[in-house]
Structures are given as C-alpha cells and as structure tokens.
Image (cartoon, rainbow, N blue to C red; front, side, top):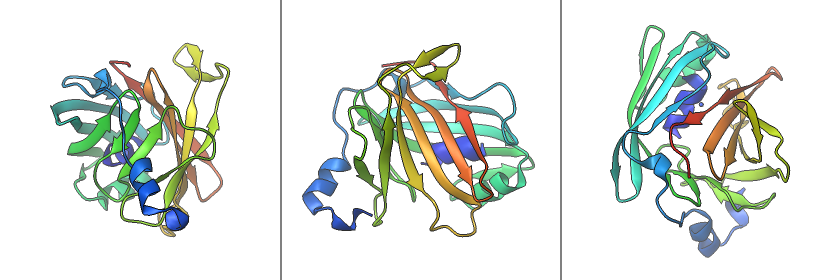
Length: 212
C-alpha cells in the first residue's frame, strides 16, 4: 500500500468467516516477472494533480516478496500532507520518497504485505462483487467492475481491466473518499483512481517494465 500511496501522492468483512478471510487474503500462482529485481514502475511523463516524476524500482526479491524504492515530485499540498503523515515516507521540499516497500506479485494477483492497507489488492480471476479483507481491520476492498471488451486505454491501445475499490470515507480529514485500483492480468496494476471529497477525481496511469 505504501507504494500505491506514493503513486497517489507521489498512489465490511465483519460477516466473513475466518476460513474465508484466510483464503481471500492469500495469493497463489507462480512468481510474476513484474516482481523481479531491477523491474521499474512509472506513471505519466506529464504532471497529474501536482504529481510528477514518479518512479519505483524493485531492489530485492525474497520468498516471493518484492522490495521497492520509490520517489516522486509532489506540489499538491493535500497529497504532500497525506504523504508526510505516512510512516516511512520522507518529504524534502517537493521530493517525496520511500524505501523497502513490500509487495507480493504473482501471476494470480498483487498483495501489499504491510502498512494500514495491507492485504490483497487484486486477484485477476475475481468476479464483480468479490471482496478482499484489509489486514487487521473489519474493512475490505471490493471488485466493482471487470470488462469483457478492450475498453481501457493503456498507452496507445485498449485493454480489459478489473477494478477494485477501497473506501476511505472513514478517514474524515484525508480529503480522499475512495481509491480504485485498476489492473490487467498481463500488465498488472495499470492505474490508480483517487476520488476527493470535493467530488473531483484523478487517475494516475501506471506502467511496468515487465509483464506476466
């Protein structure tokens, strides 16, 4: 989640049984090439909502978990303030950075391994309505759409996507009401949409130098 928060700044499970929570919160599948050492992640070359120059690199891979280092230029005061209050993030002027972000990537999906948003971000074979528990909370992420046609622009062509929402309305002072993770089974995470409490939204595209 820290990696995704940096993209954004930089981006109820009460009724589930414990067995279902364990299953929903785990990833299977082979190691994704996107989690290998040296793979890079970037966003748009243009500034979006006061965020530019985002880049992240996989610096280590151990027991199926990748460690990322990420940096970005952030001039948006709201997003910079969110970043400054997040554990592990360093803010120096408009430069925002974080190291040792733990993410698991398999050919089945993506999982954040630590932090307040730890848990599965997406499983590519999920159906609309499926949920993933957020570790240590009674909240969850929910699959809200899964396209059957190529309808999402990824660079210069269209791809199919699965979209997963994470409600943030419980964080009253953040200024953000919702994150939506946009993913594709071949290209991994391809975008993060952020909805603000003033009814506006912005989508940060994400490009990875490897693919499944």
